[in-house]
Image 1: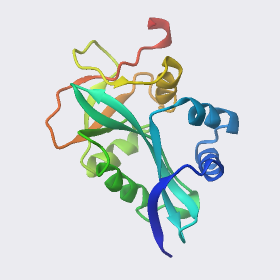
Image 2: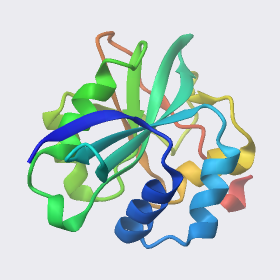
Image 3: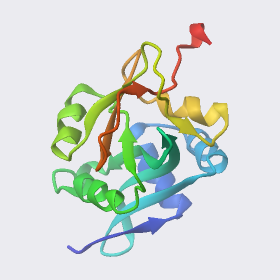
Image 4: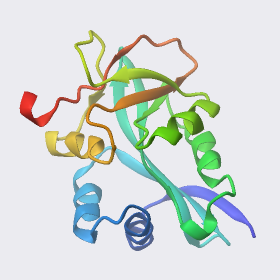
Length: 176
């Protein structure tokens, strides 16, 4: 089976895959698709037409550098264990500007992303001089943090630069 990686805006396939993997409603997915303005979807298609794996790249900044936040990485259940997410991350590195960063939603994902060159450097707890900055609404910025299993999620960065430790900018609801 031939796999093709390309940018996509196929709303129907994006919504279907996202809902299948994460269980979110079409309404929640469309909230993100409609309101997040500085994003692109990188998809992996089997046979050139069926979206089976995807991720979003959202513009962000850190330490006066431009980067991409990797969001909603997912693969259809019947297409897993084929290395598709790894292929998408490698392709995303070609479009990252100065860095990629993400928030692993579960413990095992820290190991997965570290094998792809990511290091844990961004934290929600504590005050840091350096913060991730989005050019998005507060609603969308909060949306990015809701998929994590952690009360105070940590972020991982991939970059050719040695970027310093910093903060995600995320604050608990009771701290806002």
